[in-house]
Length: 430
Picture (cartoon, rainbow, N blue to C red):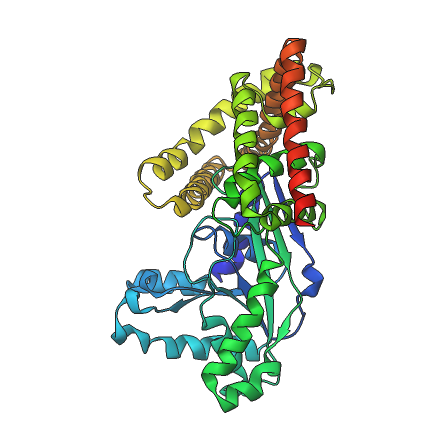
């Protein structure tokens, strides 16, 4: 099946595209049971790919029906375990009846104790908050009990959190919440179908929010960002492993977001002004908060000198290979939420095409050494990303240590004053 072929390749691509991928509390997802993953939807299609690649089990996905209009697309998407769900805007009332076939396919998958993922918000917006949930998740879970005769369906809340969803080589933190049992809502559903659906959807909302870095108020995301940056600076992560189940970073960012969300509205303007002032002065020196906070660390320069003859040329060649993805995503994609997913997908396609070409070359040459050289080129290119990131940290560290002492003290004073202002606002809440 195409799904089994694409999955490990996509996993490699995601490891290169993101610096850290953390899946927290995967043990909460029942094994060998019918499961629906109810997930938020901050990007076009990265979150389904992440879950499919790193959960360790095959997934079925519900995606918008208008992607299935051509027969070739329909066959391709279904071979990737994708099932169409039609909304009114995807083709009017005439298309809605096609959902019955999708419901049957979902019920069949759940009967076989498979895991189905649904993007419960119903549309994609890049933000650090949970938007209103659609009723489809509850309707499918309860329909599987009532119409398909299942004894239980577990609805697992999932929160996908990006440190910077608009940047490559960022961090992704995914948390799985405690599952809700659809059977707990079956009695209400049988008495009134709409009430049972509403009850399950209502309970699902806080369960999903608990898995998110949640900044729900107007302006909270902009206000929270400087404090998230400071928290990241003060609690750096190890480079390895790239994929882990460590909860530390996510818990840290959730705690920061909760503090900001709980502040009284009256305290936020002054806090925002102080944050903007601090970031503006950092920018005048071309610094980041991390570089300022960790200025005392001496970052070794010898690995940079030693690795330059190898990694600089490699990085330059890979930059040429990834240029089409960057240009297409920035110049052709009009929807913000699609920019990074398209960039990743085009990059993945470029390297897949390169692998096919090298495979053909190896067959013509009658030597596996061609593919071996290509594999080494890919591995060293991956390592060149870490080399360039180390170089960036080295340059920023050097720049921070060159700031005159008087101006350095002013920057540190602004940083400390900003943190104190947040603490005072927190005391006011208590």
